[in-house]
Image 1 (cartoon, one colour):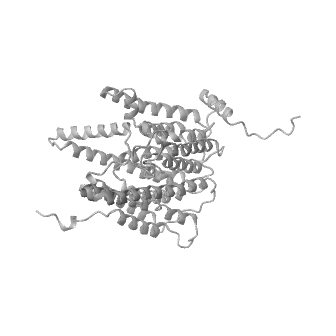
Image 2 (tube, one colour):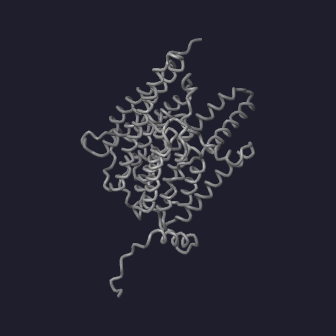
Length: 454
């Protein structure tokens, strides 16, 4: 029997999603009465990276054509190589813009309130409808989507999470008498976990806007825009991209509870590598206001996550260097020759090393500057760090927009957050005294001189 005409719909392709989301974003959030404003520029620049995604998609299509054409596909392969280099160059130029924008945001104090062109219930309904649409994009399998190449190397911890979810789904189907192919079970487990993580990001953005920005409309606007920008739809099934980001968003929400924030960021760092780079910044953010509790919780959470993964890998067979390889830590070595697709493909590793050294210097500078940070500094500098990784990361650097996309949305919509600082800690704690002593050795006291001293 033929399907109903009402179910004969087709999902938009990448270019259609780009134009649709751009026009709808302008209609919903653009301030037409204040054309020359930073927020209007931010809304437009959120789409700056999209042409790079489209160029890389075209390069992948040319590669497929070259493989199907045999010897006659040499010209297609050369064109694909040129477009691939152009696509990654475009992504890095756009990343550079947002890197500078995130640093500049630390100096922006006065921020006008968000006034969307649609009321809060309307925005909430649109966001929910778009999330349902994204779920359809994630679960509707077409031949190209089913065989879509994994973007980047998946960390072993996240791989273990997916294997566990697949085993649970398989066991539930066996109990009910259904025996689906293992590939199908793995697909549904991966897409289900991805949508759960996206939902966690949406709720986290909503709660940050409501509790910390003091305006639930801001939270709804940020969550709606997260479902609207093309990057979410392009990588909707990349579970490993959004899993650590969900922990990061909720760590930001818990910034007034150092222990909880440490656990959340530690779990993110234990399941992926890039959240670990945020530890110096966050430790400096808490400084003498809970840094010891944050650091201890972070170390315990990350060690527990990595330890469980290493134990599973040892049981399965690999040891020593095999564990390092399985955890995909070798792909984060800037002194190793790049072996995966990126703008650095075919170049010597020494060309990336200066960028890595500059990144380490930037990481050290944001740890101690500014000396007293608030929530706006934490969000902007965290985004800058994750964007900075894209320049020297040799495994598809520039494509990992979902790592920092929620942070960019918080930068766009945030109000004045000068009073949003960590709470003062209870004096007398042993951890407090130890953290204070360690911090004073790193940064001397800035107390003004005593005018009565001789």
